[in-house]
Length: 74
Image (cartoon, helix red, strand yellow):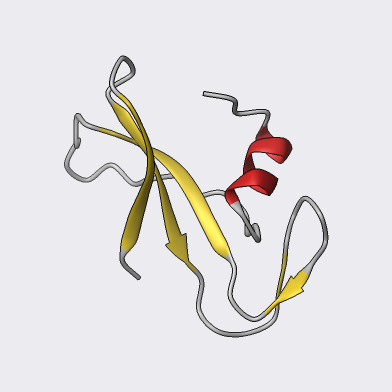
């Protein structure tokens, strides 16, 4: 699935990116909402280390739920 840049942190040289999950039954990790399509978030570094994977979050219904769950306020 393609990713979408949600926010850019130029000082950390990273971007908050979102990818969509496949169709199916998903539950938001924070609020428990059931949905057909959910999102996963990750901070992706500009360094772009080859062969280094991105650690995607569990599924969430919105970036607000992701931030509340992780405490990420940047």
